[in-house]
Image (cartoon, rainbow, N blue to C red; front, side):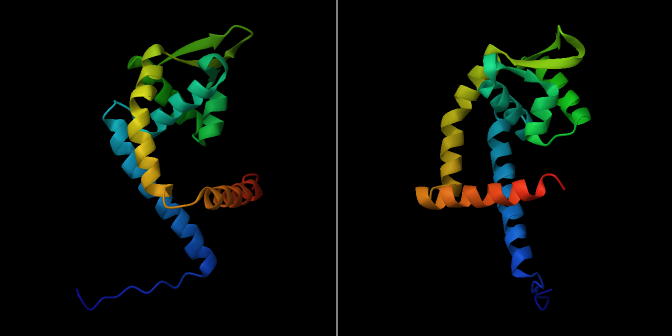
Length: 152
């Protein structure tokens, strides 16, 4: 097979997008290895992160789902497993029985604290080579791309 070579026929625009996807997938894969040591998947870790940043550690399952770009049906299963494992509580919203609230538990908060040093080191491996100015500019560009396309 040594004679088979690959030469990309992608445009520069496609190469940029594919590079973003590749970096994202690599980050997700390597981050998942860290979170697995704490009994979490990548999505479950991010649910905890969203709840921890929410007022009183609580948010609706719909809002968490929208923030993480996870379907409602998938989010329900994720939340059930996380409740079973003690990372969060699922509650009914008293003003509207159709709404499910998710609340981070002390175990969930402690798990985030335990993950933090390893996660910070891991993030630094990806973006530590960039200056603060480069990071700020890259973030602005990515937000611009996302916001232009999120409603499509």
